[in-house]
Length: 441
Image 1: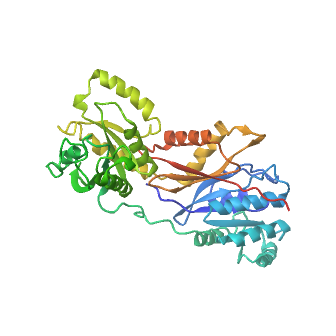
Image 2: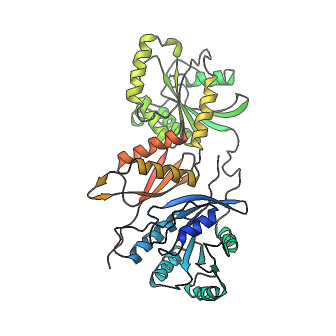
Image 3: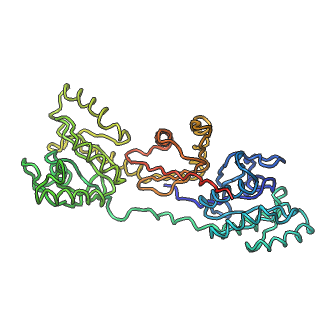
């Protein structure tokens, strides 16, 4: 799994040489460069490496064509950059000096309390270097004189950038501690305890044909597929918690806590009888808890061709909310196909812990938006300006947008994310942060 790399946002007035400087930082000519203010129309991110440290550079060039004025548009750019970045590279034209717009951005940067590196660009000779010293008056610390065009001073500036950026997490930062935790859940009498006994290779759990024999969750350390797993066997979930009598009520509460304690849940369903509302509600509770999910159809030895036909139709109808969940067919009593459980567990946990680099994510979002832009509503079209993966387990993404995205478009993004990056067996959470409307003064 790739570690999250820190993000550097590059901001500044039009035509101060931001895109040329971005090209200098990433070491290749990718950002659009033209001697016309505001050529960069869309926010673009690039992967960069300096002195063995990786980071993502976000070029925030594209000025909002709807902005009421330069100062307003650059302030909006700065606010977005500050939201998504770990540090900001503020580029000023040393040959022009400090402008009113620059001072407005400085106020925003100070309020945000994010680390700022001040780049005095277009310093091509000693005379301009003396002029760059005047940028100390911005109050952002040392201005780093640099020539984006010729590369002069870029090494010192990059060293300062690395000092401003946080260190990436160590390689084993997200490494799970101890055996992976697997909750076995399902309504009463679907064969949860029988499955655990089969996995453990001995009768460790009381099994009885009477529904709801198991009351307390039972933790079992089991060797499976050459590895150690911690299986949590839960009491059967009753139809309604409020309808359950004493011990069953507490059993259902313990089941919920077992799901919360697990990393992945195996929902056991009796394949020989029709799917019920209970089954789908248990599946939903696992997804809502943000846990990886596997659906195991048990008692497959009792499933004939006719039942299989109807089960396929039930799955299409009832499991439409979790098409990403792997399904396996097993017979816990005999051990048939139990070996398939390990492959499903590995796939679901891998999806649950998948991290997409910021560069790869924004390249994907750029393609998606250009091929399938958000529909125009009320004469306005919301755009995705930048995306980042905030966390894993489950994968959680944050999209910074120019306006609110419709739910149907959010579902479309999730579908395409799964096509591109996998995410088997895991829910995905996508949050959007629309840009706040600036108040007229």
